[in-house]
Image (cartoon, rainbow, N blue to C red):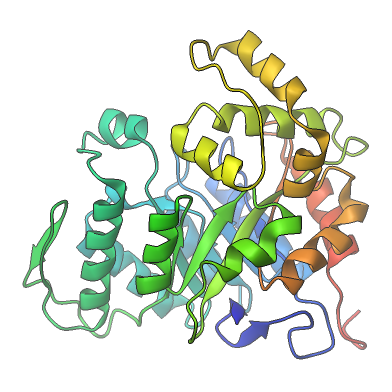
Length: 346
């Protein structure tokens, strides 16, 4: 089963007769710390199941989630995602436990590999093997959260003798962002769930079934771009450009091909003209299947398809960077379309 929160399992109806609510991903750029907290409190008011934040080069994900934890009461909070290379594994263990202490039962720590440019260029760390770096990090996290001294010497990370103070907090749910089959298998082996990107709704059940362990509780969440040209002119075109931009990354290109995208990619040029041409050539069917391009009114149907495949949709409103008013408009439209409250709560 998939959990929206620790105390709320999500099937087609969440066990309550009410369709499970989607999560909402806050903007990854041009968002102030106070703005993030304000949007998170709005998300709770609107009935979203969780508020998620990514960490790239703007807000510190852990600090913001801590602030959101204190400003909210019931909504789930999560990272989608924090790069494993941005902090040592013990630092991530302290961060996750601290957040769990602030918001017990509401925290999902989503971790990912990031990119060579970010890891080596920005953080000055060796990118190495993505699989080994994530595996070593998760092993150390599990040891630390057990409150026993760490004892791990891996190819990319090691920790000996770190012991987390039990008063810090408990262990949060741990999700891994995964593209390739080996990373997805690692998530099934060591994590509580997986975060997927550009997941076609028509193949969601098939792809998630190939990841989930045969027994035990395992969650799946998917980032879903929501474009509404009436609310935000040009948003569908932005989705197409984003998909095209990811095709320049070999790992993403392999994942998109596995998801059914068939395009010829000429790697000799990846400038603006190439991006425009590639975005224009993308099949309409794939773009519409891996994002919501029919406007916010289409969210109810699209998200139900994912929920029926035991996937929690994490809505990503498509707006111009920094246009928080537009983000809020789309956010409210998604809530009106896709969030159903029990009688008496309306």
